Length: 102
Figure (cartoon, rainbow, N blue to C red):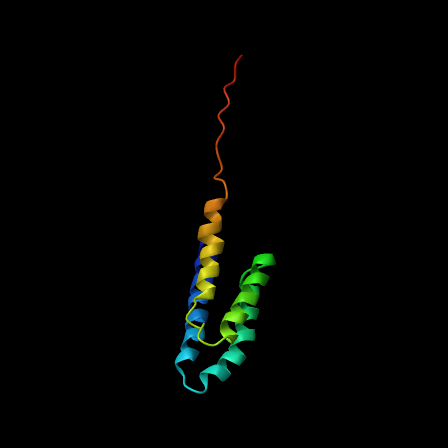
């Protein structure tokens, strides 16, 4: 599980970098964004299953298709949500000690 978690982070950092690089290519960058946005959305939904993955894929599509928003690291933010912020909200398992009286 731990290895899979960091594999998703590495993949997300790579996808964020690719999305940001298109911002620095004059004239061709916006055309690349039109091609990159659906691909990024598909990858997001593959990486994160369920409703959260679907919502994140819509967000990444919108973020990539809109001009000047390429600097937002959507994949990294989704990883932080899934493995850091959401994990902190879940209650920690507790050990209950039971005393046996005879």
